[in-house]
Image (tube, rainbow, N blue to C red; front, side, top):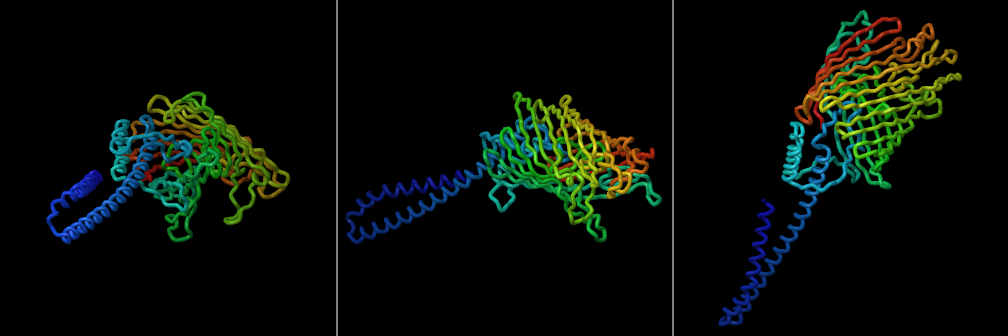
Length: 536
């Protein structure tokens, strides 16, 4: 309305100027009886007035040009935001959870440009597509941005767009039994003489912070990068240091995405084990770490190629090289020495084949993967580490989704199997005189998700990692890094996640741990966890 009023005012001024020009000849005729001096004075005054009007008109035109240019730019930005939101918030889409590796990748988030109406008409069109409270709320948020003609940006030293994202998360927890890690327990341990049999605590160190940068187009490929941090890197050496957590790098990836092929470099989850159970009680370590979930974030280079079998069917081929981690902790806090896999002087190799059928929000995906690395422990002792993996995501109707992973292999401590152990020794691991035996293991997890509504979901999951007892008994008293005598680790969990708004969540989870030692001693533990988070 303000722009329309200004245009009417300018039109009135231009019309007045035209009338002034028309009236000049008539005024000259009416003043004929006057003296020559009076005529000259009147004409001079009219010319001066006319010049002033022309000057004002010129300034008004310049202001109009600037206003039109600014309006065009704002309209273009808002139209782009609405078009991206419409593609992402399609009528059948579900908002991806931040937790776990099943969230959409940067390549999945890229959408094709389509012309959309701007302003309130676009907001009305979006509202017609929103069939749930969550989608209505997204539409209202976008409509508010349209009304304000405002777009929030993160400033960077480059000219390319940057996005800030993350979650501020508070976890309140109570543990029953003795566990390896009070915040995010993975193992149940025997009760010590001074243990109280349980604990209570709270933490915010599972909060996450992420950056995404969208760069230029190179050789027809869209470039992008992403960094992800949390505060699970340890504690400050000070009083009450448990509340002063250190920043930790989780993942850092750079991508080149062509229409059918992608090149990904950086540190990421194992691409041949791409899924994790859904949990906000366990973000620092993906749920069922060391209980059936191969998860370790590893430096890697991989190539992905997509083959379209039909409009709704895709075949994905992935292959890459990884840092051959073995699970062994570094001997120094600052100096890095080669781990057994790195001492072999060659990378780890991995591949995965996956078939996807259906729309992205309700797609059926089946995948098979393989992994190999050589590990050198000195003194001529070597170990061939390998794994075969399978993963699945199966929609069952409109509300149920069954997902999970399975693996079988040897020497997989660097990926999170066998409680971080890859090999067993007859004596000290650092002694060349100690004999070596690779540790075979089998494990996996499965989860059933029930989407009660757009705002409420229920998840029930089970996972197990089982190192082979015959390997653990190969030596009379085997030694290794990590928990040497653990022969099986099981986990069960059930959680409820409530998201009244797209940027606000509440979650309640119960987790039960069952850890068995080679001595047949069993340890049980459980945790109740209440999570409150704000996503941004």
